Image (tube, rainbow, N blue to C red; front, top):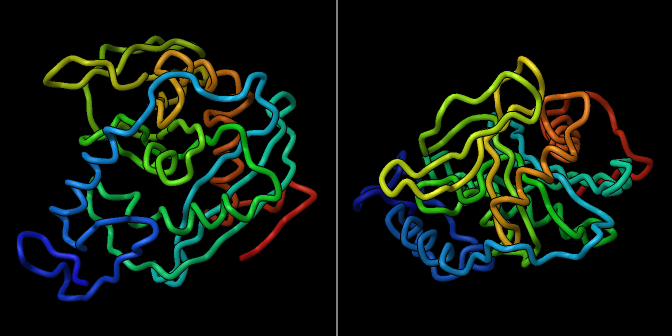
Length: 250
């Protein structure tokens, strides 16, 4: 298969398609866009997860070997204490270049491998990236939800799409993120820590818009990022050591 943009191969390289992760994808950018739109129709944007939550997971992705290896980190935490229980790092060959709006096609296989290796299934997954706050409503958090069936939400460091009013300067201040054309709410701009840049929070799958921002705020303590993705970010980017008594490499 060749990853193509309007009939031309990106960078002149053939890129294989992971049929299990991307069913029906023909390897083209246009095909990926179409698949995103199709999968987004299956998203459930209401709360459909276990309560009370017992275990949650955070996931993030980094790259090694000058981008040739995708390194996904998954951290399992106690949902109440936020104590890390298990950490997993999964490495997979990077089979696709970066294409704006198609980040999940680059990262999903490694993320699913890391989540699958956790010794217990999380009740909800927090992704470092977008949920439905995405041009075709299928950011990495939404795609992970569809691929795994797990409840997911996204807490991104930067805005990808949408417009919003100014957000207040204090922790918990928030304002809706709206689709620029339809004015439909697609997420939140959340000040998670006084004086820090806001996060972009949006539901992925089986989580409602209103609940997504409350959960991120609940799981954000001393730092700007919520604990699940803060710990996963450290592992994925090789900053700091293990925070969990159980640490696995795949």
